[in-house]
Length: 310
Ligand SMILES: C[S@@+](CC[C@H](N)C(=O)[O-])C[C@H]1O[C@@H](n2cnc3c(N)ncnc32)[C@H](O)[C@@H]1O
Image (tube, rainbow, N blue to C red):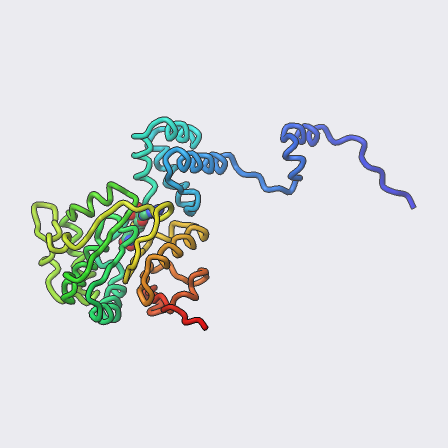
């Protein structure tokens, strides 16, 4: 039998390609996927942000972080992510401005009214059996969610026995949240949400209007503590009776979602509740067995009690 002889020389262009790609390309083999330049720049940029400023976006969903960084790049008139990286490393005020692009702060009062109705009808009766409750609204953005909860608790006669913690890593948003001042033009839509959620009064009783702005009433603000907290790098808020973290996990990859769900599990009392956004759930999470589902549509879960051993 005649054996096929090995080719003695490669075609000129193939040989050139091999030399140009260098030894690592030879090791990886021709089938290894090759990253495009922008993906390499993006991961270097995220690494630079993490190491220089301590903000870790490496486990955010890459498609949306790339889109937002690209907006920031264009706004700054820079040619590519490498130029952005250089500015990020050397210019703190530039980084502060860049951070504003990194968080999506879209929110509204009584967003997903049915969710608030479920809280009112199913959680409040349980809370009424406690002398005092603590609620953590994580990723509160400009505060509309936490004011909605405060209104609901007030109508249930429970606000005085509650402390609400509202946290975010976006300082500009927290500033607005703390002031509780919103555009008047948004109030009609919020009033409609409020009534759909089972609101019992007049929504306009909860703010005072001045020109184009509405300011939430002081008795609501007084029960809320606003504070900076980064879900990626900061620790637990202990002994919570309810954590709402709505429309935040959706921006994280699976690894970060798991990490943050662990943080929430460690922050909740046994028998306490976790409320996620409409597109988020505990399904497929390692913490799922630690919860029972109170309402799957409204993404409300109850942390199981202690398991008795022995
Ligand atoms: C779309 S808003 C959701 C606001 C509100 N929870 C709601 O459902 O209407 C997402 C918020 O998550 C915050 N966020 C994103 N990553 C965060 C992190 N690592 N730590 C704390 N907050 C974060 C953003 O700053 C933004 O305010």
